[in-house]
Amino acid sequence: MTAVFFEVPASGGSRPGEPDPPGQRPAPAPGPLVNAPWPVAALVVTIVLGYLLQSRFPLESVTQWLAFSPALLLEGHPERMITSVFVHGNWAHALMNAAFILAFGAPVARFFGPNVGGALDFFLFYLFCGVLACGGFAALHWGQNVSLIGASGAASGLMGGAARLIGGNGRVGPIFSRAVTGMGLGWLIVNIIMAFAGGLLVPDGSSAAVGWEAHLAGFVVGVLLIGPFGWVAQRR
Image (tube, rainbow, N blue to C red; front, side, top):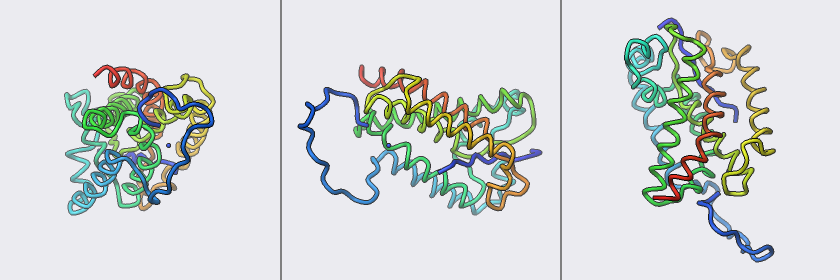
């Protein structure tokens, strides 16, 4: 591989039902400092433990076998669009993605619900966003022998889905709600900066670039997919 693109993020609800009457919504009880739904917590633990295992091997070897590459996609390796989501460049990279998922995954997980079916919907939504984020990266680097690693494309999809839910007050809101356009514009600006100064934003990654293309593709995919995924979840 000629280069490794780290997906570095910048820095949330329940399954839709009938809303409580105005003025009758109970005050929330005090809860723990971190009150993430269990599917989000499981995903964060997977990233942390996954990097703990990965760190026992040279990064070059890991990327050779697990990273996504547009060139490898053309050679018949679509599975790299999934495996690359679980590979990170260093502890800072893994922990930043874990924090990103913790922040934006919570409203999406609550939307799908805490049962097994809802958790499955959440994980599938996350993976679909990650796969299509790799597709967006490949579209702009068609056939190139460059590697993409990291969960930020999938995490950006959670951000896009959360934006739709925030715009709809817990339901799937309009695609161009204020929450979606505001968060989307902010994420676009952050990624424009990353496109020009990406290497400076990757700890210990002076030879790496930032996969901003996957970030933006993931956000758009999350905005678009949360509606169909919610529709399917409600009819199971």
